[in-house]
Image (cartoon, rainbow, N blue to C red; front, side):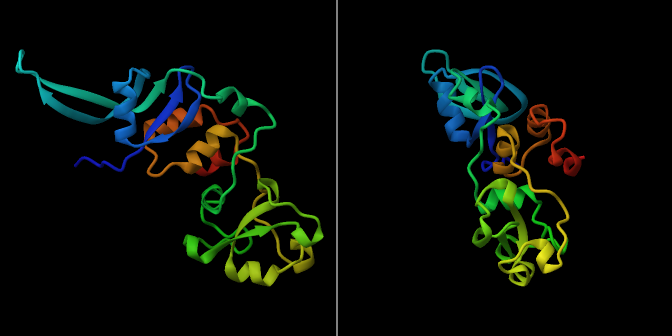
Length: 196
């Protein structure tokens, strides 16, 4: 069955992951001549109209990964000081929806953003100072450091690189898309351990 909600991974012409697009946006990129090449598995086969002269119906094959013209500021995302935008969704995805204090897995509604070093003590709202915490653990820790609250962190928070961030933004990432993204992860990426 055709899953029209499946996302297509868009890259620049050099293969730098850029973002996720739906099948309509991918079809538009193809029709505008912006797609340099496609790789990965075929996701969609779209059918168009019938040519009056040839009586042939047009089709458009959309792959799971498409490369488009231009670099789209991708070079800025390769710099060492690049920091992707932070949201609870990507933070919870980074930590696999696990409270990094009690180790329980929770739904997004049961989770919160915890500042390892509280803002009241000079901590900042940034990737390296944030972990996913269940509401209970976050309330128990309150405005203290984990040490002062007698709580131990189960993992060290980290700032994802651009490819890791693109993975975190994805929904239902397919095996070929995951393999492509993993090739752009740092060798020391904590996500590699989680993804096997």
